[in-house]
Length: 185
Image (tube, rainbow, N blue to C red; front, side, top):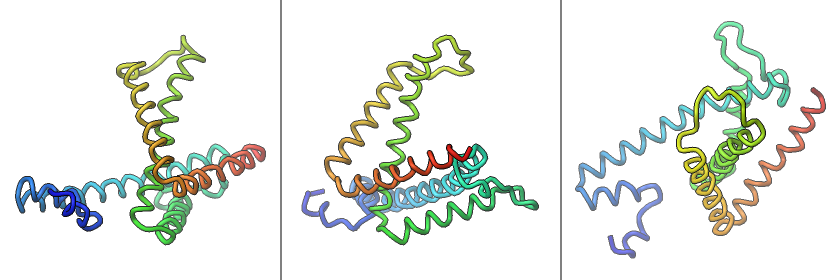
């Protein structure tokens, strides 16, 4: 596609427009359907995983204790689900889709990079610990992941400093809350 045409492609239509140009109308529609199904699957995974994080935090004393309660009939973390719904509503109502994807994507890449970097810390601190599974390609594959995560974070800071600042601010506000709950523990 010429750059001028590419620049005017509607928001959210880039992938299927390019597929349509490369492989035809049917392929463009197939890619569009695949994109919708992928986004729906991601949303579904986050709806299931997010409240379980709140539930585990509350159970460990790092969040409101009432969020650790399980519904007596359905055996689900109902209050954690409501907490996730509330926070998701705040995010959806306060931003555009693009801003929301940037904000959440930034946080996911940041924390995924930290989680994988923790492998190096744990291996250094406890070199003789029993490991039920091995990190594939250690230390190269995890090192590459951490380097790629750092590059993406650096790029985001460079290209979108204000959005990145607000994302870091929200994440940073969690630190005093964590210490407050840890002190109560």
